[in-house]
Length: 98
Image (tube, helix red, strand yellow):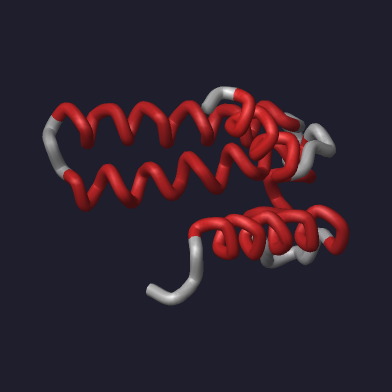
């Protein structure tokens, strides 16, 4: 894989921000910004994916763990975007914890 994790996260967050701004009708991401439940829709998905990750970990299903971990990261980025946060905010916090 030639792309770094940093590049992938930056690109994913850029797509999320674009969907937030443009709100295309056929976009799942856009639907999380316009859902009638508001931010609760994205928060519920984040919780659901976390539960699925934990169950995969319990079952030692590493392929499913990777899939669910990616879902967690995606929905986490959506929630950060909902709150007008940036990846820099997350990076700074992680750097402070080193």
